[in-house]
Length: 391
Image 1 (cartoon, one colour):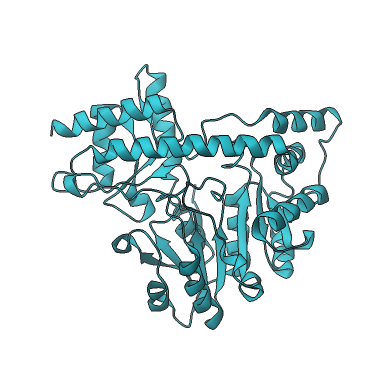
Image 2 (image 1 turned 120 degrees about the vertical axis):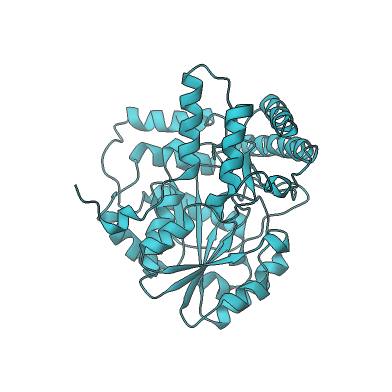
């Protein structure tokens, strides 16, 4: 049967495919150590689970408003004001089925054929395909020569009369880089001058390592805030990846249009999952758990960076946030065509799974997720070192 051109051109998710491969090998009895999954290895806090269970027991199993319950929207607004320093109202918020869904709705609401959207590379694998699905063109800006940081000069060179938007992800997936205020101020000035909408993907904002600090572009000024849409959600911060709750915060007219789009696709997010998300935002207990886990991620970051730096031919810029390390494999590209071949070798000869950087716009890098135990990090990197030493 014929498949539409749009769907035929959509690439599959490399990270999800590799995670499935790891599970397949484990089912065969092979002791594979996986560094592929983009989700915390911690469980969802009990307070959040109990809130959802109680919601189910109270019969909260019906439709909610398309864009989320008013209680959850109000909690998002309160958390936003507390963390970002200025107020928004519920009409500036839409709740969707995960942050990915929020991005999808936003891209389809803002962009169309003939538009261009600046997308710094290395990028999260889904940004370019989603932009392309709208008919717009992702304009890739390579930041590898600048230490994985996007500079204002790079943005200025990428701007054309067709530029409608720019995607900023800090902390970044896959690099873990964190933008500082000065970088963001210079980029925001360009966006104001050229009437460019800023999409700020802040999904990892609670996983930032000392001495780095999270700073949102929307906090620069009221003028910049009006040009910015913030993407956030429950998945990474609260280990709620399977709950599928994401948020978009921005201009009320665009949010209303996103609700119209959502009404014709998924309709509302899951009713009782919204109750869990509400608990995550208002509980002091969950806030303490998030901080405890952030410190654990920082310890794992320190360990994996040290272990990577012990491997000849691999180099890494220390990530300032998220739970990803993104080392270069320059020392091995004389023996492997690209990161795809490199990662295949590691699966076959080390029983270690990492994600090739090709999917992130960086074919000379690979991504390790350190959302796994220190024991796995130690064993996995030792296996990688041994397998590469035998080349």
